[in-house]
Image (cartoon, rainbow over all chains, first blue to last red; front, side, top):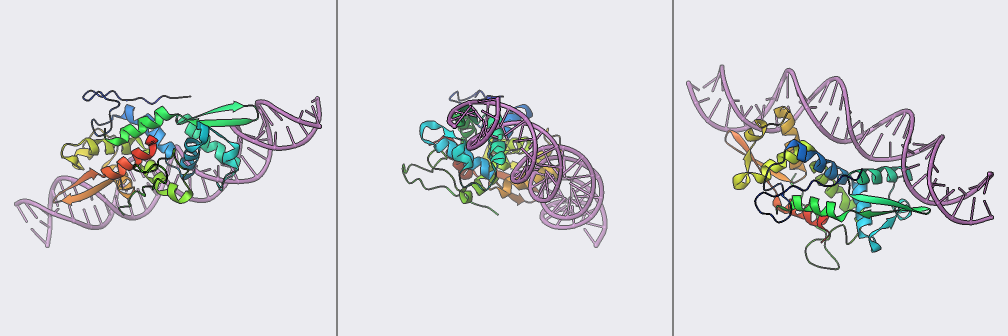
Length: 118
Length: 118
DNA sequence: TTCCTGTTTCGATGAATCTCAAATCAAGCT
DNA sequence: AGCTTGATTTGAGATTCATCGAAACAGGAA
């Protein structure tokens, strides 16, 4: 379910993507964006994404996440990773025993652009 | 409760603010950021913020929000505006009969920078 | 094959959230 | 004062979410 970010076409300045500052969102446009921001709206998920994005090599093993200083059980970690995955913010891949996650930078940059005001 | 965004000092590249790509967030740093992203994680709030940010003159009257095409009652609109307000994303001011809201652009740009990866 | 470690899914529970109707507050007007 | 309009707050109902323990699944090693 790798839902792509519906980057809004900017009718005026055709640089990148229309931020909320230029034109009001309708219900259809707002729904997927809200899902992505909601995925970011949890301290644990924000820290998980932070760890994934800051990881050297652009990816991180789940074992380095569950063993971390998060005060939650592995099932909870997995639950939060799933929400980030379903929002399209990260992707996961199993290689042998371990599962590796990496950020979807295009989606993150898209959200950033929407917030930027340009 | 106009909570300022705790812009993270970047120890390495001292350009603006440390995005999640550079250093992992700890629990203390993540909490206020999560509150702000959570405030964005609702379609109605996203559309409200969009309307506010896109408003000519930089502000908009609540009467132009409640009368809009949102399929919710005025109390619900007011509830969502309060959440955006408490997250520090907008500010409201009463001038006579009507209440006007405007975005807190610094906070929005701060969130954008955190997502941008630089 | 049988174990063992790592990860995800399932089921349940308590907390948080969204929405509305009713009540309350704020400001202007008669 | 009393009345009207606009906006918020309160209280209640229904839904969603976060978290856990237990179970199931995936892959490697003995």
